[in-house]
Length: 276
Image 1 (cartoon, rainbow, N blue to C red):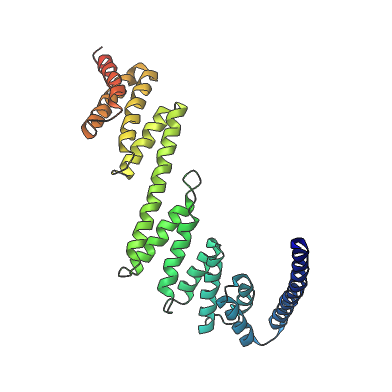
Image 2: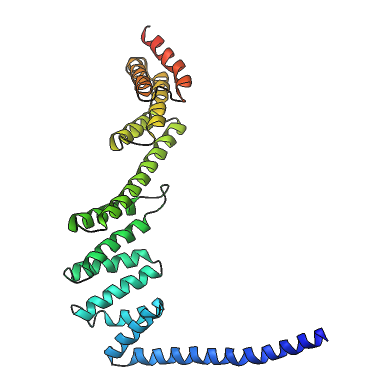
């Protein structure tokens, strides 16, 4: 009895689902045909309203088809401003931040006094921020994001978004700092101690409050010592002196450093070489 009832239920379910699917497909097909007809019509107002309706329903890809047709037609008008704004938002919602940022910037340039100008300038910078890659990759986008965020802060210093913009800039600087640190360590591991020292010292100059400062001072100390060991005779004294100086900096700033035990012997050997 159970299996008979189950079989009957499945048959009934199939009979109900099939018509619903057919109706759904017909509705989608009719809607697509209807949108195609609207796109081909000369009635730009209808196209505008249709695109806006799709945008409000969250169908951003379809909405963009209408916005792309209309932006040039309404360029320089109030509708043109709205279309550029909706276009930027649509690309943002579909996570195409590069193109979204382009249209947000275009909005601020073409309609600087419009109601969304401040919002769009921030969102343009935010899109640049979201486009910034991980530290291992080229950081051109990161520098662009820093520039865009600074432009927003300078343009709207009283905006409620300034504090958040500064936070985003700190995040970007942390990324650049990490990349600089990784590059310096790579030189160190490769045995290119001169390049490693230069990179570490530049990092300290650019980021004096770096979270990597203890590690940097350690690497500089060891790198100077190893560099001195490989140097020609007339260069050794200067580089052993730098070893001792770097060691003293490490001790001064981090008297409890986990690296002291290792570098004490290096400092001792460098001093020994200086006495010769």
